[in-house]
Length: 214
Image (cartoon, rainbow, N blue to C red; front, side, top):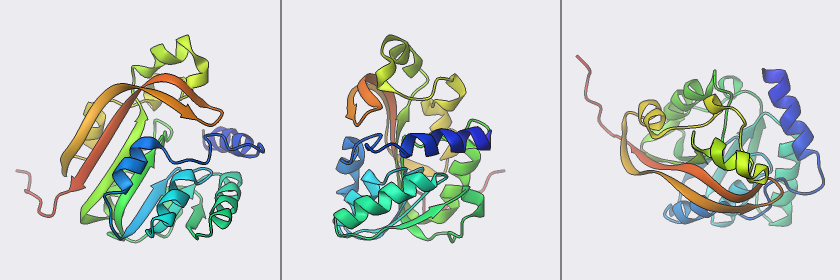
């Protein structure tokens, strides 16, 4: 699973053009502007469009992905925009992020393989400070209908890699839900996100106090 996952993304990011463009995702752009300062971690960040945009706002930006080709493109984009981002390549459990290191975590189309995606969400939760924010946008389970009509809209071809609102509630159970919605949107992001699709959008604030379970 990991080898095929890695090959897919290295092949995609090895292309000259940016797979999803160089402009930030619209939902991310709207939400990240609400953060005045702080440290932000971008998961499955690929070619860096969202991380670079956030660094230009003055945020302290870290990112990770399994693709070295993605990192190379991201660092090139950062240099062109006169910003720096701290970018690691590898599997999340092997990376050296500290617990409660970040003020925000951004997951924009971070479709991790089905067998690890909830595990990754739980692990990322540990890296977020209490009171910190998760910003999430990815394709919903209803997206397959859109993909069948228009393959150019992109997204994983299997149901288990897609998301439901219940899944997000479960993975981020200790959060105040600021926004959680499934909706149809029009995408125009580079080569691989074009057309109508169905997405889940989630913004949650990690609760400062926890209620013990009995």
